[in-house]
Length: 98
Image (cartoon, rainbow, N blue to C red; front, side):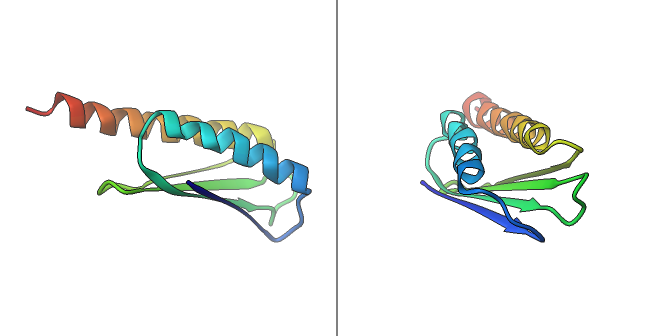
């Protein structure tokens, strides 16, 4: 699994990038065969960062979510929650389909 953390319109410490990568890596427990996870942090507005996460899978479906808030970690948590919901719903469709 390849995790890329990109920052637009600003700079971010390497430790912060590693923490983001650790949090996003936990998405693998919901859907197997994840090939790439791309995280884009947009710091255009300093008081409202935007976090966009795209999960590319070997299955036919890719997952994408974004969130904007006043707190970077809150944005990341909300985005991960949205992705978890999408992945759970997709997995339920796969397993419940007859």
